[in-house]
Amino acid sequence: MSEPATSPGSPPASQDENHSVVKAAGVIGIGTFSSRILGFVRDMVLARLFGATPAADAFYVAFRIPSLLRELFAEGSMSSAFIPVFTEYRTLRSKQEAWELASAVFTTLLTIVTLVTVMGILAAPWLVQLLAPGFDANPEKVALTTLLTRVMFPYLLFISLAALAMGILNSVRAFAAPAFSPLFLNIFMIGCALFVSPYLSEPIVGVAIGVVAGGAAQFAMQLPSLKLRGLLFGFRWEWGHPGLRRIGALMIPSLLGLSVTQINITVSTILASFFAGGPTYLFYGMRLIQFPLGIFGVALATAILPTLSAQAARGALGELRVTLGFGLRMILFIILPAMLGLILLRQPIVHLFFEHGSFTAHDTAETALAVLCYSVGLWAFGGVRIIVSAFYSLQDTRTPAISAAIAVAANLLFSLLLMSSLGAAGLALATALAAMVNGGILVAVLHRRLGGIEWGSVGRSSLRVLVASVPLVVICGWVSTAQLWTHLGDWLEKSIMLTMTIGLSVSGYLGVHAMLRSEELVFVWGMVQRKLRLKAKG
Image (cartoon, rainbow, N blue to C red; front, side):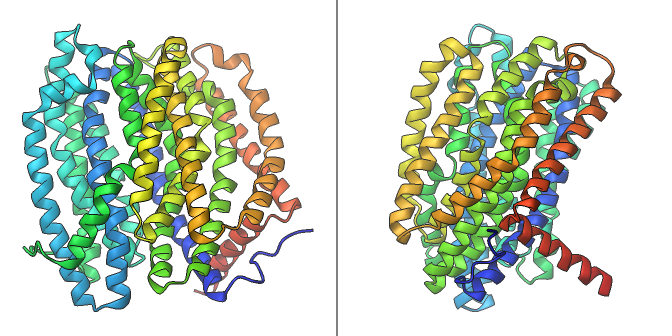
């Protein structure tokens, strides 16, 4: 028997919130999808120009430093600490008080991150030695990595301010500008790689310049949306602001909590520096994992946090449980088939997108192995995003921090055990296993904290997803064994085959869900129909 699109026992307010979350996640997903597609173009350009050469290894190690700090200071802890407090101010206080809080946070963030950026530029040689000990045998590689680190460090400043702008806009349910702003990072990186790099003695430096320019553009494009809503922050030196102190208290433990994946990737980067091409293989492998994770997992987590925060601020824990269960069901509905598709089509995808120019067949094999190892943990990466959002909505950053610390230790242990037999791919598998450890701990604690989660509906949803994935596994498994993927050339034929494979797999997956009258599909299709009717009336 099919389940209704909404549970009869669910409060009407929760049903409305679910519609709001899915609609917001759709906007974020479209923006992220556009960015990921352009990101693939960027990766193809960089793979063709630099392959898995020492210059590429140097760039990806150098880029890891501001990327980690971005997650710590910006998109991870800053957003997760800021949004619940700012949402509370917007819900329970005046707009002026909310603006004052945003301005105080802006001034403090600008001051701190500027100091960190200056210190990072000065300390670049030591940071490189810490993150890439395997480069020590090649002084030229160390020097290039140090130069790239210094060039790219200002990216941290711009992306931190962009994250603050994103947090404010997301809190007032304005998702479009933040979702589409990452397009500019890819545009500037591609442009600089093609039109600046050829004129430099060290071409890879041109890509680093594009990173900084793209970060500045991400921040600048969100300012008009802030101004339109009367929330364009200004300078406000108020270090003792109570809201600022609360954000700081929440932010300190969450520096580790939400950033566990980035920290584990950084640990992998350190150990991968001992393998030729290792940092590059892991980078491209994680890029493919981040495609579905960014479009759906991160988008849904970003959309759901303001809703969970508002429910927590009202003390509506019943509604919060319903919204959380809905988020977990939706993440499984999308992430599990994506995981299976990546596992089965890893070789064709890497071959088609990256095996050009300097990127060899050996590089394809190594990258595909990294994709396989990362993919087994894709469900955990996505689930953790939703679970952590629930903790932060309750203004609890301590529990995710403790769990993350355990996961980091687990990642290091798994890495040391697996790298000797699997090489760089073992580091990817260790990251996936650590995400599972982190997710298991968080779920157990949250279950006790909320007095239960809607596990019955989540379990039924998982069973439907597994049944619906059967045609996807059959189609992708058959196509992946074709001889077409073993040689170069025939790129048009390969592109058509991969596109048709994905299309047929998705159609088969959704077709089975339709036959099962899946609650998740009914819900999404109902929203699409309402959208079409509104457009027809307009």
